[in-house]
Image (cartoon, rainbow, N blue to C red; front, side, top):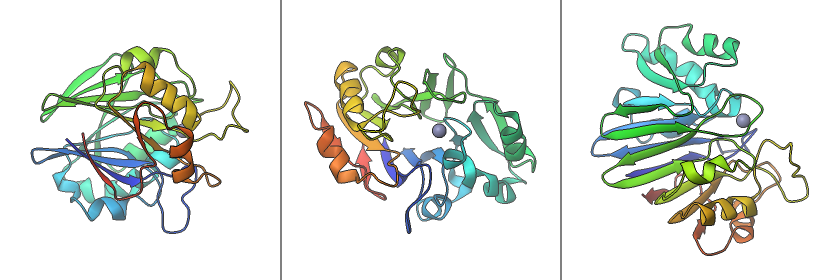
Length: 234
Ligand SMILES: [Zn+2]
């Protein structure tokens, strides 16, 4: 599989950057995982919307779903499969109101086959319903935490990923047990406990520098700050 980082910021993009959005490709098939603010033009530099097999939204916070709203104008005549939690209902209604998506609920424990991808949804700890995502194809495993604070159940669910993409959106000084995100160091602990082959950090807050976050998370796994437009072979 090939992973392209389209956006790695949250909850707001910085000038010239985009919020969480990731393109996963394999053998001519493509999944868009999250569609945060300002990510759509970046996506279209790689694939057309017609080339997407499906859109997966880990949850319905705007920094993960806002650019999916305008995709509906283009996909109205050929609705795209959309997998996401079905709450908050008003956001789901906005995403499906133009008929551009064929919506399927993404719930913990559910597995779906999409082209060559086997996609399983897992747990996450976040203020709104959110799923972690595991994608298997070509004998390789890509795993994504979604937005999550510490969630011990993710250690088992995300186990054995060749590449783990993790939300590192909290600084050490700001983190509490009630925070919506992990810190970079916590992402490294998750990667080590779950036996990930490689860790890629994302969802950087306005005050976070991706390079510094990667240094904070440095350990036994290879860590990257996930520069935008960077491509990873999974
Ligand atoms: Zn969120």
